[in-house]
Length: 397
View (cartoon, rainbow, N blue to C red):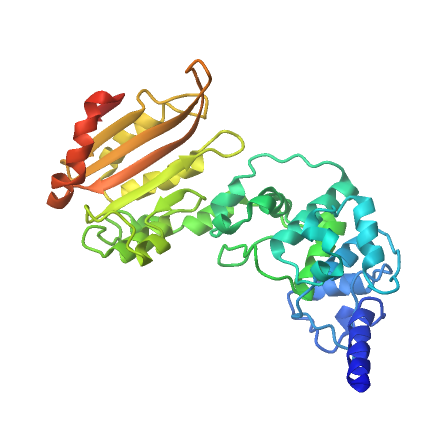
């Protein structure tokens, strides 16, 4: 038993030594000049702060996942601080220094639980939180405009945790932490030593940060999208296709964080509306700047997949009267019979009222798109028409 404990202790020491033993990344046996992270590793190997170094066996281990305490240590050193290892839990001095510098807060990672949470692997979105605070420590408070552009070019933005949402968008716009070639960010993905090297170099040297090219990324991501719309070479008939196949085609057209149904889970558990052979619903919600333009673009593409542009324009012109959450649609609900009555589109504005029943703001605009097959007409539409005379509704036909 004592031999086992001794072995574990030695291994632990070797791992920790890799953070302050001067065997540098770019000179390691497992780093090649053709590696994408080579320049970053070489840059850090020449940095006397010892931000990240290699292992005693001469390797750098670029694919090894990084723990929270290891990344915090890197950032503290990058800020020019070196509190040194502490007795007992090796990283405690770095964590204390990070809190003193303001790049870590007591509530982050449930710090009150002690070392156990700091030894867990750090995720990419957690890293964003720390990086933004470090940037502001180095460069002062940052000013950002149009943060939601990030949501329009990152295909998995719906996976951003609410806690880290703004930090991710800020680091992405700064060019410190960007996405993958498939336009995903993988917010819950882990951070490797190679990735951490690139991130820290971009932190300490703004000249190494790639410029956020919104227009270029947006156009690249949307190239060929027209082929999936009505009349396009890759168009799939939403009525003839099964629910899953049709939804998968719709998902290709949605680039923002717009709520859309049927979701994969709704399809899996048969929770989607069965009265119509083609049914879509969703919510056009406002970003922090009070705009919902990205959601509108996605909604328009959902319509363009189903009907000619002149029919789409009827709905979009109605929505155009609304520019932000403080301008309102003409009616609480509007129903559009389109494309020779093949489709029924419903638009419903959800409003906030004060104590005197005055409108304060609009929360969102909900929508439904139904294909009017006979089953829909005989069931759901019958219920809709019964309530229309009693509400603020307009019918466009």
